View: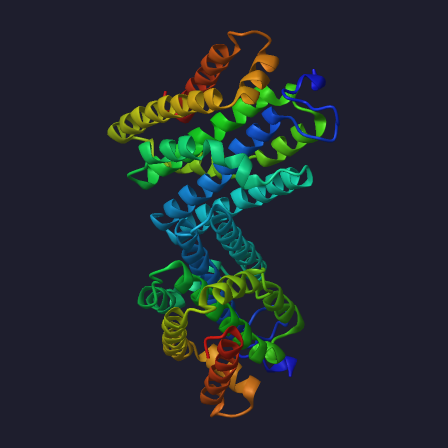
Length: 225
Length: 225
């Protein structure tokens, strides 16, 4: 399957347009997550929480740097790769601006895990090098465990908070999938990657259903199901 | 001179209160710089500038992590070490909130270099391990060269902008030295470190004069003298 990468060129050392788009989405996702986490750090209720979120934001930029170098080595500017997807990712961030520390944490948890699920689905159509890069970039930076701990402590014995956060997590999923559809519509290369990964033309709808199911399971595990 | 560290305890593996305070100031300075740079990244006029500032913010958190670990290995919580100095550093940031991208860059340049000068003055009274840590933490992350380039391009052939930024850099120095005096007044250990480093009781005033002179030279080199 590793030869199936969309837009593969004659020179195997070059990079297909689907892969460029995938890495572009990922890079702008990291830069955007940096912003989100840095802003959330400011609203942290404790100095420890502030430092924890700032460190997680810093880890996103470490990943951004890896993507930038990888693209650069293949003659692609990271800005050029990110640009087509900026408005969709910005739109997602604007439509889901957290109103509290707990909403911030749930958002980071939901988005990080959705991204990880999505790239896991695509991993088998990527060439080895790109797959390794994506795996590194999406490796958990300890953020999930932190968010899980804080959220679990907050919703224990507090049904109204739990209900509000459960609604919030469903809204996040809806907005994320909406913008993800726009992103795929923007990029033939990405659409081809997904079709190659899932094997047929109904692949995109099936992929989104699968992401939705994994999200639901995760929210149940978190106590927000 | 390495035995002169203020508040040194009987156990040489322990850490003096002057050193704890120095590292506490430095750690909160990094966390605070992270905030400042992350916020400035948002106002960057280009995507490249935004990514550059976000990466510099991330580097600050890398340094923060080193300081946290060093203190932790010596039984000192980083939060506890930072807490006495938070309000002075916060007061500095609030009184010098940049109103433009260029003001942000000049601020980062001035503050980073002042901090580096200050710690260079103290380096010889620190034990080897602490000195190495401080040197690493204050190593230039490429920020200065970036700021220099951007500022030089902006003030070339633009006297009004140059004059405004020159005034701004003088205000930054004044505010920084004012808050630095409060920080030293807060910590007997730090005051002792400075006296040990400079050799006499007039050391603090002499140190501040020296910082001022180095700042003036640097501003001249930048074209803001």
